Length: 329
Image (cartoon, rainbow, N blue to C red; front, side, top):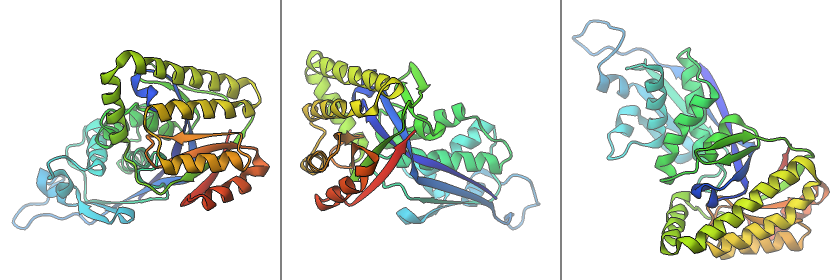
């Protein structure tokens, strides 16, 4: 048996602009995680054949079981690969086998559980992929380095998000705060003083792929205008890193408010997010913004640690389905 887990993540600054080459900051959220457990199953040999180490392609795939109770999925690898597009969980499995040069896996079961809300901007898809890949590679006796796991998980992210930035798989794999520029830089950074974030979930499922596609269409309509907005968001992210590394993190509050205003211009906020953000500010948050793709999902609020319970309570009163208090350090 082999087990592996991966944390959730939250974007602090830079969402959407990061898809267009600007920097973004993201941090792990260890209070929620995805876990994969791989166990062996009895080897099955088709009747009328001699025992052999590898079964034919279709047969061995039928004896790789994937179970994810949280999404009511109970299937075998062959069925998940037989759809017009492969299921992301199946792709996570076959990616590891291809990376290891293994043509046929032995009969095995992969059990997946997760406490990360789906389609809420907390990196659920990336965390599940990373957990599966690590557990499977360990089970097969050939663990893969983080760099390779992140690259493989990025390919699975394309099924989830279309044109992902790559920040989800990066933060989830390394489980550290990351300063990220797509295709150019992935750099863990130091937190000078730990600070507290309250995450508020609207309860609205908001697939990132849809909002990313809509922002790209908006950009195509007026490239010069939206490039300036992306520049502003990128400058905020760069300034935020400087604050986190060298100053009182309370200075992040106004930057969050400024970043949210720019995301509103991109039409990726929604009334439910705006209501939670206003409630957080009124209850003492130093700043607040949406996080992730928008149109639902989560918002984040920077708070002084002692004020976190009051802000979390205000978010629930304003309609949040759940809150998470996390310490960034």
